[in-house]
Image 1 (cartoon, rainbow, N blue to C red):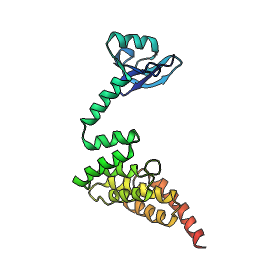
Image 2: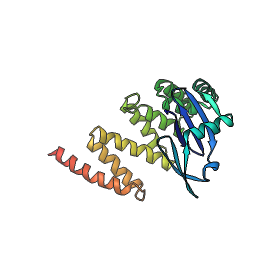
Image 3: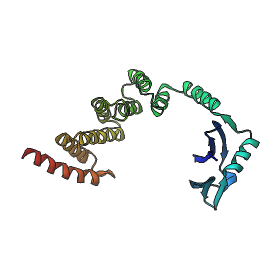
Image 4: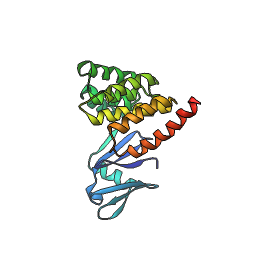
Length: 215
């Protein structure tokens, strides 16, 4: 049986790739209360709840979904998904486009958001991610958007995120001196952050690499 049951958020779903059909979602409550984690088995899924460990057979789940009228074809699912995306705000559309690897569309949507709100933190982060090597492969542009995040003075979380990603990109590109300058800036600005000790260790290694390069 190629059907696969999985747990998503508060609900359980099943997808049959051969029939291109979705079953569910069904609520978790009939299957053991508050689900803490789920593990797929050979023909179903194990649900660990706050009360017990329950095995949900795929065939039983499909039967319950059919009885509840929770069956939808892949084409219907994609149509409903596309309708929901089209009705969402531009930034949400951009996130969906990114997740579906529609990078040019996501970039254009984010650019429109930033034209109206230049300091939109989410749009800047999505735009930066879009230009990473795994997407549009323009790391210099990614660095630019991370820099804009790092420059947001009234949002320490956004600034920290921008700096850390700049730090990572410098390290990936083996720009050790630039990485060290950024790392030291992070140390000074965020001495009590949970990542501080890790960054200090990286900075010590970077210092050695910079010294070696200088001869």
